[in-house]
Length: 215
Image 1 (cartoon, rainbow, N blue to C red):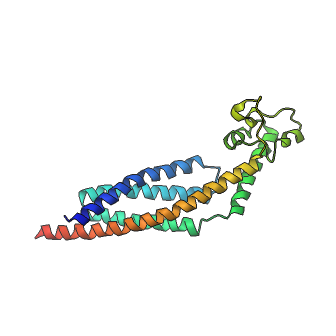
Image 2: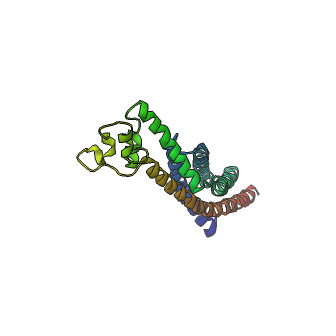
Image 3: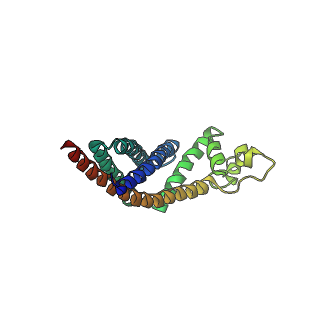
């Protein structure tokens, strides 16, 4: 086996190891984001994470065993991964206004629950370090004499409460998350294109080697 083939195998197996970890990470993020992000985005993360993980495992096995069929299947899965990444960039790209609107609607749902069942807003207020729907004054408006402990840093009511409302804080966090994901997708596209070329290069080399050994 030539030096070029050996280098391509090392390159792909290194990326496959990283891809397997990143695929599991995407699946974990999608699971944590359930009911906190748009359904299309959750499905996109599950789909991309699953394809990345499966293709990485299959790629490692096919390359190490120099199996033509497994390596070819791996190459086609990489093509699928590339298509999903491109869809994430061009089709599932949410505007800033849409993300902010979604975040505010989610906070409004929690605030409506808070009006009936005190404490419903605690998870948002602790996670996003905010207080009330739009500001701490929201609790005054609904007749609450004291702010919940989740409105304070580490729940310490002796501290100054958070001054930003959860509608603002969640929308900011959601916009940052989606922007980071979109930037990461471009990097994934570039790396995946290189991996596709490498995979089909190895398919050709393994096939030639099998033909040579058959004589």
